[in-house]
Image (cartoon, rainbow, N blue to C red; front, side, top):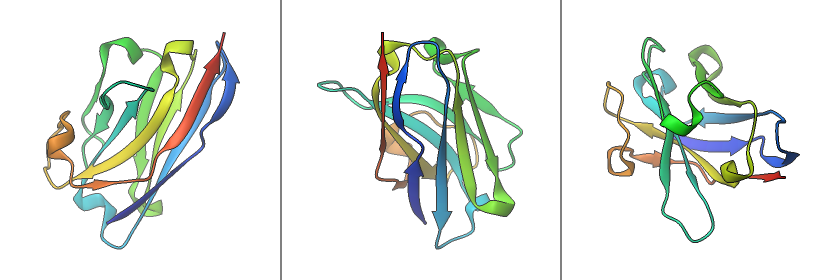
Length: 123
């Protein structure tokens, strides 16, 4: 499956952004989906994940209550709604798809990756 992330940009602290992840090539609903981010000079880290059926989600502690992951299998698209953004959320955000049916949080468990979209939050 091919993934393309979009929706990043430059915002101020407290603002919101919605990232999208468009999937093509294979049946999107066959895969669990996750969002990761990588800040300058840091390793890629897990942000959020959602099961193929949307019945399960999981979040990094620091984004709980601010970020919401969702998906629309009919549109082959996943989303990450980010509210109350903070400067520490600044990073390149990547969407990924996993062949595992359950929620997974390690980069090693994801088989397909999008190209990333930059989110910059100014203070």
